[in-house]
Amino acid sequence: MNAEPMKRIEKCRVLGVLDDGTKSLSQDALAHLQQAQLVVGAARTLQLFAAHIAPGAQQRDLTGAMSQVPEWIRAAQAADQRVVVLATGDPLCHGIAAYLASRLCIEAIEVLPNVSTLQLACARLGLPWQDMKFSSVHSKDAGDWVAGSDPGHGLYALLRDIRQHDRLAILTSPSNTPDRIARMLVTEGLADDFEMAVAERLCQPEERIVSGISIQAATKIPFADPNVVLLWRTRLRAPQVLFGLPDASFEQRHPDKGLITKNEVRAVSLARMQLRADSVVWDIGAGSGSVGLEAARLCRQGHVYAIEKNADDSAIVQRNRFAMGISNHTLVHGKAPEGLTAWADPDAVFIGGSGGELAGLIALILQRLKPGGWLVMNFVTLENLSVALETLKASGANWDVLQLQASRSKPILHMNRMAAENPVWIVCAQAGGAA
Image (cartoon, rainbow, N blue to C red):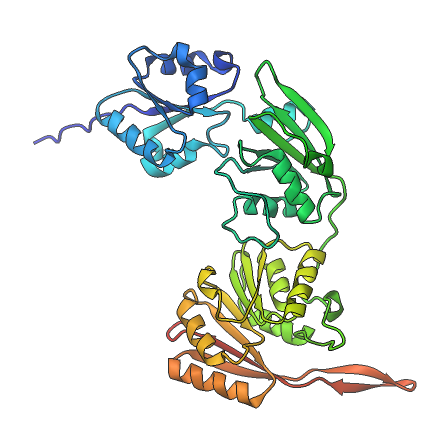
């Protein structure tokens, strides 16, 4: 008995379009649009192509309804309807096509791309784009950037890209505007490092290109929507040391100088945390911030959450963060465990100070650590070491202890002697069964 052949499903065509209407479409793309029985797009795009949509075709506005689009397409395909989705520029460059492919499977769609508006903006200014970082804030209103914001902020990924690249092309939105991006650069101390250009209303009669704008000036300029932002660095990035920073790199508390995890101990502690580029790290009892800030440099695609109860030390951490040009670091002025529930689950945790809450903190951290994650603690007193070990034993954690004592050379007359630093116990632990 022969099996019945599978029914052929009409593919959904995802058409890249520009604001000059049908001038930007090939004959094939225009034919698909004219024959479609369901056309999906933003309200502005549907209006732009209204004259070329069949009178009996159904139109759906995807604005604010992105999650419903795959179901619209499935239902239409099940009813043997021809479906077209209109997307600005290249639908596979920060566009809807990848979203649809991940939910419908790639065989259910066919992409007919156009020139990306980012590419088009570069062409208007004669800028080669093969080494540009393409980024996007074409999303819901993110609000103005606040220093120390976590990855939930809508401008977070853009700032990370700006820190790591010299030339960027950025898709904006009606809320996340060029002046908002400029204000973020000012907040992060990057205003003198970049210049900006803005391409407004590309392919429309009102098209305008504004180039060579200082970041400070751009904070006060309203630009017409839609627009694309180009950023290029005018001051070269200095190569950064990622690991093993000297203690003098960090501001420390005065007159009680020395509230810092010393270089040798910091290096071993960071090594035992087994950090990856995308690790989420907790720094509890941040002090001067040295461990968390160095971890942030190592985890460029990750994030560090830090907490410090002393107000003066919290201010020092903030100044160190700013001076080192670090954005993937959030500091809370408070006493752990307050506020930790709002943090993302960690891949690694460092405890440099516990404020008398050590046993409870250890128990909480072992519950929140991701599988395979490490808890690393530094102690200089026998009492805290004892509390930590008893708590770890009771929890069934896997743990080990390293005593580290460094000696540094110091001049004496015309010779040198070795001066010993205080011994430090480094306790490393994983939740039971994780080793």
